[in-house]
Length: 532
Ligand code: HEM
Image 1 (cartoon, rainbow, N blue to C red):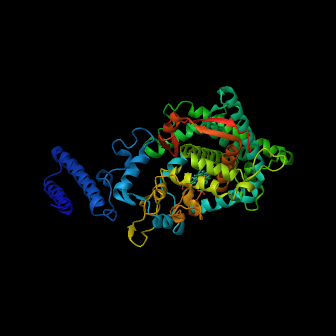
Image 2 (cartoon, rainbow, N blue to C red):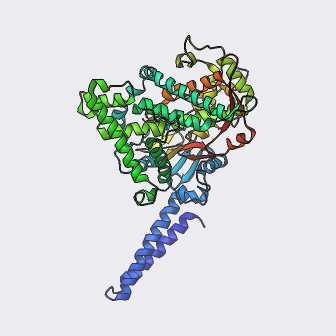
Image 3 (cartoon, rainbow, N blue to C red):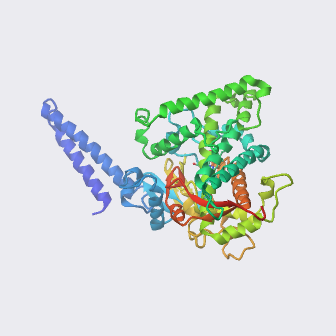
């Protein structure tokens, strides 16, 4: 018996029952009860038949996927988040089993075909999906979480000058100053733990986190948080609580309205502290006039007050929210990618040697203790190390959501009705054997045109910063920061793996961004005595 006949029978039996009952008197209480039962049965019948229709006959029915997900949302799939932060691995296993279009829910399709991804993100530039509304909670939307295209276009136009190459060049001084504090901190840690060969233990993962936080502090907030000097600051602390909570709200939307009542330790207090901190900085800048001006991202946002068009003037609340967004979107993404690059370099000593050989062809400028971005921008192996890490250890393993506002056909073959949630799994495209040879191996040579590695990188299947109007506004900022930290460390220090730590680097979880379970990865380091 096929599904359509089951559905028909259910509908017929419910309507005949309804007819029988309506024929009798409705005045007595018994009949009222029967009517109630009929209403429930009719509703249940409708629900079951529409679920069966969507699962087996609807427009998404031909897309393969786990049976349960044809009926229920992914968050109800048994064990999907057990252990916490592991759902991305299950989704990857489904992709390997079912292919590059997978049914991931009654109304959700996972996409990792590179042509379809380009169409969704770039050519059709579809609006963001409902996940981003959940991230808004009760605050006004930001550049990242708005789903409104005209609002986004206007906000992006206002904020873009803060991320232009020219403006970023002018911020390089802050990045280099902070990188110097990072090097000083490493020297301190080495001295405290030095062995007979001069090597000390350094938690490179944590120090990279502090570096990224301090860099955003300097450039976006106008103040370093002094994390590298061992400070505990309200801003990073609040953001870290908020990230954990946001990740939970994305997977458990029902908790949204309840979230403020739940005992998320100190969330309310931390949020108030953060608001007070931001308000103080903005008010100081506004009151201080010309004297208080500083060359940074915050200043660009504050300067929108002088825009001709009143709609382009950001309110104090929006300035605070957007700067906090840069910290959330710009710190862990960058520090974890750099951390993964070191984890890969420690597993591949020949690659480390090649990178060092390249870096050693460049000398610090006279009187300088660190490189400039301009000296590093075009180094092929350094950029290949970064790109290969962005491919294989992609931070956004959870993917991004888009939702078509009209019926569309993907790549001329897959009909997708308006309102379907398209779960864009860019990471899956990064490791698809159809696009990459030895996709699970970390091979920087694939990015180098004149290397011996036969199959070169497929740039059309590479989306680390997404694509289209909602691509990453901080891409150049992140690349600059990653080049500076990797090149300076490789130039100044000998770095060696600690065998037990290598295994730790393989255990991963994702709460919005990919990270290592241990949140710590130690290496042995000592100052170089030659070539430095
Ligand atoms: C290696 C580092 C980084 C990676 C891999 C990365 C990746 C991404 C990706 C994949 C998106 C699209 C997300 C989506 O559609 O859901 C995105 C958006 C965004 N990123 Fe980044 N990002 C990085 C660093 C940064 C930095 C340093 C900043 C700011 C200082 C930043 C700010 C943003 C913002 C504001 C958006 C939203 C843009 C919009 O919708 O117009 N990111 N990023």
